[in-house]
Image 1 (spheres, rainbow, N blue to C red):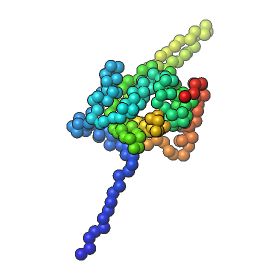
Image 2 (image 1 turned 90 degrees about the horizontal axis):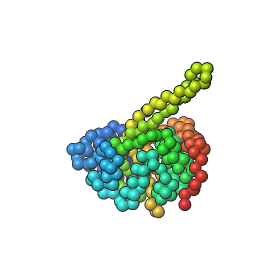
Image 3 (image 1 turned 90 degrees about the vertical axis):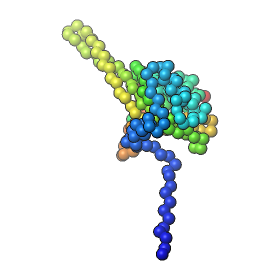
Image 4 (image 1 turned 120 degrees about the vertical axis):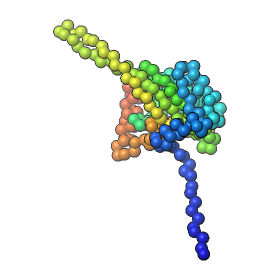
Length: 225
């Protein structure tokens, strides 16, 4: 009697949860011991970002990167952060933009601070922090508040009335951060709802064009050191 053939299953190098799987992980974390860090104030945000409530060990340099990204995502960009934590030729990818190089990704971070009046961390969970590859993966839920201004002319005297519309959007995302040997970001991918970035025909061109348009409007002059 011959034995059945041996089947070997290989685990992929990078495993990014799908939206459904990620939601299940977050819900099950309360029972499995993995921590989902919730924040209700700026002070608690900083405590949570420090990783003291996470069950996953995080590299010290990854902690610094996470702290700097927290400032950027909270719409508090600075040249110091970009010079310290980002490679000059880094790639920054979102569903709507694909930035390559300092001029483009710096412009996007500063544009975000202009567009949003407030950005809050609702939850944060460290998913992975590894040496080989040098990569940090975390899940976050953020609430963005933006003010939209609309000018309307009233009457013959050309009086303009300003209407302010407040819009709130909550974004659930998985952020994959890749670093080089100098511990600087060379690629950051922000996957909204854990979904893969758009790859259909024309999508990449559209995202690249968006990034170039933002950099043209923001006109970031300073170069990374």
